Length: 180
Image (tube, rainbow, N blue to C red; front, side, top):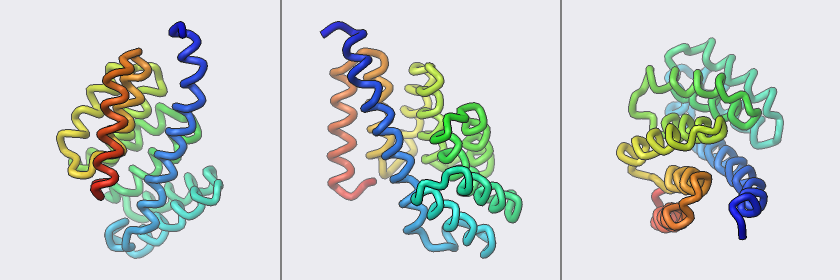
């Protein structure tokens, strides 16, 4: 199979997997206690509401509610992270990068934002930049299954299918061991 044929086959798979990743991230937020989502009760409740809206397919409403959470608590890194994933889903890549970077400015250890930056860079056509971000995310991530998945996408886009499969398998292995 020629490279172009492989790209045509893998492109819909990559898009579907990215959607699954964003959905997984949002479901994770729904499972968090409100206190973890935000320091302020109102911002925390808005984070949960935004995640629920996104899960229901109301991405535009989820974006608006995430922005409300940020207005309620501008120091809420999780709200910026959430907004970044919602914008990534909408294809607003520059805005998603801005949101992820704001989250990291508040909380430099927020591994989901580093993974989000990697995914946004990959969608922007910068697999080398994505690889650097995702490798950095793996270094700080005790629960790396989704980051391995994203790195697998990067290697796939670079045509390094062997490395891609290794990352996908490692993601599955860490997920099964409970390190989501």
